[in-house]
Length: 431
Image (cartoon, rainbow, N blue to C red; front, side):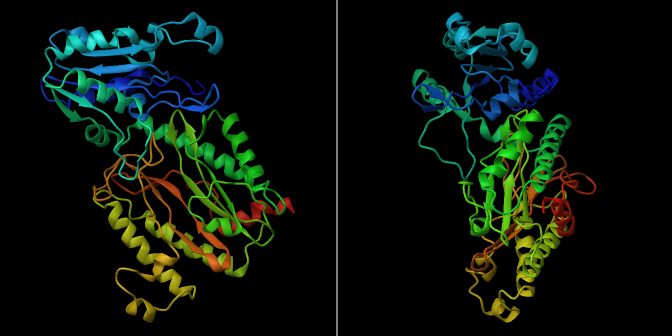
């Protein structure tokens, strides 16, 4: 792994917290992520399933975890299964995790081979009454491809139809939504690497470069700073592409006079950063571009103050949309009178800002967490107002990651350039 080993006390504590939520005579089962086929005999780079990493720290495939906190046999209250050593696989693919290493990483004492999983589970099911099974329950997520946890759930329910089956996801969501000090520091690191990459591209961007060339600069900075890569598909969107919310083609030439919208974040030790910035391709905002930019920046600064305990993402969205509506009036996009006469189900601001401005971030760039859930100290949430004026080829989004505390919100990206004048100054040496 590229990052220094995380203390296994972090993973022990996570398991203890989860196990403490289980009713008596209940066990929970988790599966590691599978390798995802790419083409031919190739696979995509491996990335561990987030919940499995949260509970174990293990980065390997073909692994399982069983938690049964009040099991009558104490040594079976935590069992981690890893892939049995295969000399052929080791020869072709490299080092395979051994039992001592798995124990050192996870803090689990009872490490068994994956071919012992079925027999161990059957032994434990004899005394267990309920089983907690895991799956991705993110509200906006859907996939036709079943993951390992879904396949495992189907297998267990088929083999043990008379047991009660319950959802592990709500329990894990309640834990993952509030970050520990270890997690906060890992996200700080991801944010710092993201900032380095942004400063690098500020020195690189100019007309006639291609979006993919800019991405290559980001990739390089991520790699030399031990990031595993991007936390999500990066958006490097010049000109009209800046008005496409999830543009990821990153293949067009940058033109003088256009804006370039970035939305990218490093992944470090599986933890994500999520940043958006917008810069002038030729190093100088036009008067109109700067007016729009500063409108979004004013809202960003005001909105961050809303990230306090007791507030909700729903409330932050509504307040931020209202702020942006006022700025849009100032930019001449519509009038206050137009707002009074607008259809209540189709507000005018939605033509120029059609997305929410906040989401949880952590092991996933869109981490578990509900919009109506009151914020608590330790949550990390994005703040990302924007404006998209397609007729003018102006797409601007500014986004920082905000730590909620019991005092003032902490901007984890406060040192990444965002002021229009600073961006212009940093780009001047390009010309």
